[in-house]
Length: 506
Image (cartoon, rainbow, N blue to C red):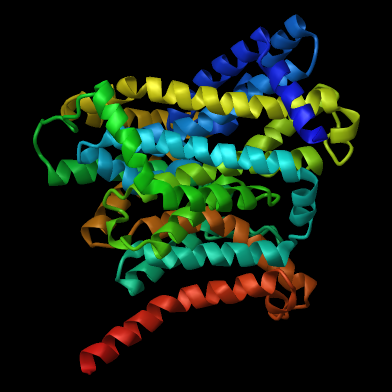
């Protein structure tokens, strides 16, 4: 009861005109920052962090500046799906899985359905995570603390297990794609010895490793554009969809078909998000993989399945709130964006940690209340702006293709300010196009390069802890069951292959 009273008081403070106005501005800014390839929530929050000093000069406290930053975070989580669906370019790493089915829906003239499903799934995921955050913050903080290096590696292994099903029925090509992504993830300096690894031809640009957005924008921006040019060499429009209230209302009714992916993403995303250093990207990728594995219509995934849009969008929004929990209760950022938010809290004289809820309730509960307000504002703004988003799809491809190319170049350069990464992005785009012609699945490689840098240090640190004994992944009470489940999922395609051969023989 005390929690509900504190939450209600916090919501009332968040609804004050100045705070509500900042939430609306932050969501709109975050929406377009998230939709711009190469920017994303991290850059948006970091760029606008100095602006909070101006806000503080008018409001005189830390609550309003943090509400503004949290609203940008919320808007950016919603916005990442926009360019993934309309242009086929992930706005951020958290929206990569949305591209798998969102883009095929757009090409089939159902972009409005994909955008509505993405918005409503995001709203559902964020609502579930807000409720869990409000009711179980201290308990879930203890759960997050119990996850050490072996447990996080087991979780990453489980994520890799779900990837095996993303490449279709051709398991060897899928495994090759995963291994290729893992090799790309090891480029750069060794995290333990400090020695350079796979620095090709001694080119210094490889020393910082293969940055994920470089690969993602190359594969899904340049590669997708080249594939579209190759398969459809006409100047027709990318989509003929006409936006009316009836179409949007019909798309809202179709959302019930995506309830399974939404439920999986909402629950899984939050619990992955609360793990320190995990963040929303692994959560969205795992949600997509598990949704496909558990779906009765798994063959539709990758071709325009609504669950394939709902699962990652519900997961990344759920995880974004989940990542706030270790930041506020433990002082440990759960994602790169929450690391910037943590810096903002420290700037304003707040001390994140177990005592924050008791020592600074006048800050904590209005911020939590703003999560609910920002979530409602974000879904409303997102649905209202759907005609603007679809305007891009009504452009002739002769205009859209150069626009995608320029956005890919500018987005990559804006993210890292390095021309080497721009050329590398183009190289990956051409390579992705050639691999697609050879019918190699690209999704497992992209996902492997996301989780590789997380999984490798956890594996090596776990083995250092156990003196090289792999049993540490089976004997610990949390890591053991997760590892066993992951191994069974990895072997599942092999069991299916043997079963099918036995049936054919019979």
